[in-house]
Amino acid sequence: MTTAETSENGQEAAGGRQAKIVALVVAVSFFMQILDGTIVTTSLPQMAASFGVQPVSMSIGITVYMLTMAAFIPLSGWLGDRFGARRVFLMSIGVFTGASLFCGLSGGLAEFVLWRAVQGAGSALMTPVGRIIVLKNARKSELVQAIALITWPALTAPVIGPVLGGFITTYASWHWNFLINIPIGVLGMALVLRFVPEQRDADPSPLDLMGFILSAAGLTFLLAALELSVKGDGGLLPVLAMLAAGLVLSVMATRHFLAVDNPLLDLSAFRVQTFSMSTLSAGTACRMAINATPFLLPLLFQLGFGLSSIAAGTYLLVYFLGNFSMKAVTTPLLRFFGFRTVLGLNGLIAALSIVACGFLSPETPPFLIHALLFLAGLSRSMEFTALNTLAFADINPAQRSSASTLSSMLQQVSMLLGVAVAAAVLNIASALRGAETPVLADFRWAFVLVGAIGVISSLRFLQLPAEAGAEVSGHRRFQKS
Image 1: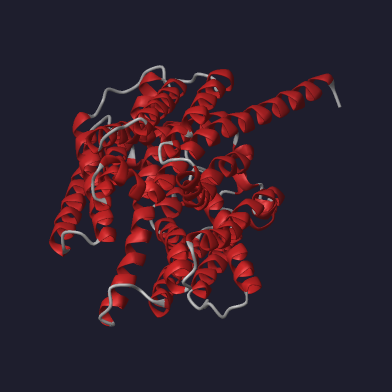
Image 2 (image 1 turned 120 degrees about the vertical axis):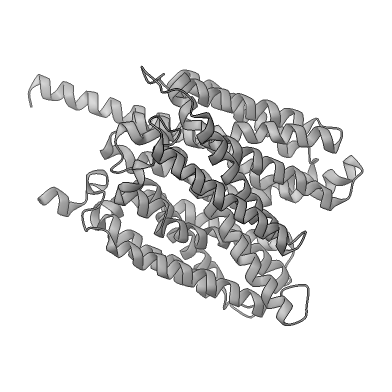
């Protein structure tokens, strides 16, 4: 090997290490953000008692966080291009961390809601801008590992959050569910300053204010409708009205983006098959099915099995273990089988494992429940990593910011849509029996329907070319051609 080749290999190895370090830094911040969204739900009764309000009033803290986040997500890509992704990412962590401090120190509901809104604004910028940073620092051959690193927080935090939140609320106080973000946020900012290089566009486009207003309002109304449908408050009419408003505004935003010269969001990414299928069509349906599972499982174990929250949490830890264990083999599997086979076959396994959860009962041997949950966790991790990586496999540098923003928007919709569909099935099944609380049979219908959506979406992935995303996965068939 010549000196030049040795030097080139050394530079590639150094570049690969840099990409992994950047992805790890981003993952730390993502973990804090997603953990906060799940950890707080377990402490709402204690917070209500502390504020002197009814527990149902505390739901506004979750709603305002979600709606503020929805309103600011469309702006994230432009801000990253205009002011630099590193600077905006650092600012988003700082805003989120500072708001977490004041949430934990809040003495009343109004004060808490205000800081939750600020926290939601910081959260809105964190995910899309963090993903942009990873995309800019990783070569295509490093993309699978980099995306896998920033995907694990979304897989683990929703499972760990309720268990950790219950532990903190029981043995400390609800304040620490927010104050725990302070050291994580400070560490995240220090790591960004140390390891993330500054990159910004030389000639950013002006702000498309009308596009921002239309897209932010459309996404906010859509998510509000889905959130309200899950809670079941206010009746069907407000849900339908907000859903209609969200759809109309989203259509108006789409037409606007296609008509102007410098749109806030470049929709050309949807012309790329790998992006559109992994985010908009089959990808949304697949995420919807898988995202319903962490919502249904705790309810199944507590309402269907009659277990305590701690006992239900032990089953969820097995589910988390499956998510975590898949990381070591994600890259080799994608390299050997390719995206089409993995998304189709693994997606089918994930969907069928969801269906199988509907047939669990208190009489099912624990080792079978553990095995099924571990399998569901494995397939969930594989599917999410493959989807998130394929989405950006063929996206060119000019499309990265908009593609990352669009992906974040659609993931928010799919997450709430999965919960809304699962909750609707449970409510309908209970209503048909004339009962208010779901029983084991009602959960069976929910798991089967959600799993069926997963099966259909998995089969859609077989329409992808065999070499889809092969430059990223290193699929052997691509390398032989």
